[in-house]
Length: 187
Image (cartoon, rainbow, N blue to C red):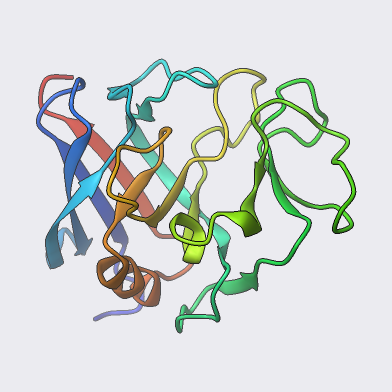
């Protein structure tokens, strides 16, 4: 593959009401892997996502520069952070660090509230995950913590999930600047 060739993870659902989608990896507009079955939010997909509504946001977004996980680095080319006790995703829309990774001393209550996630405790879904920069401006209430993570056998809270082997293949393939495009045929 040519180094300057744009990478995109394409997520396509049949409608905005479904909790299933198909994922394919593309480079220079050509499919290089997939299609794979994926799960999306329990509330379907929406261009008007709000905090806690269970929808997966429609649109095209960049991936964050860091891949996270409770397991050892699966071989990603991006920076990797192995999760430890005290690693959180701040989902409190009134917090100054809303929609950001935060580390709080293990055993201490975080200074933020809301539906903030204790990332290290989700040993299946967060074995590995990439951050989808959906709300990059961190607009309070617009939604936070959108990830591409390991499938748990259920719809997500707004993330996109893949079977572990397909996710690992994706994470190893991603380079800085890759995007994810989430669409629905009925949107």
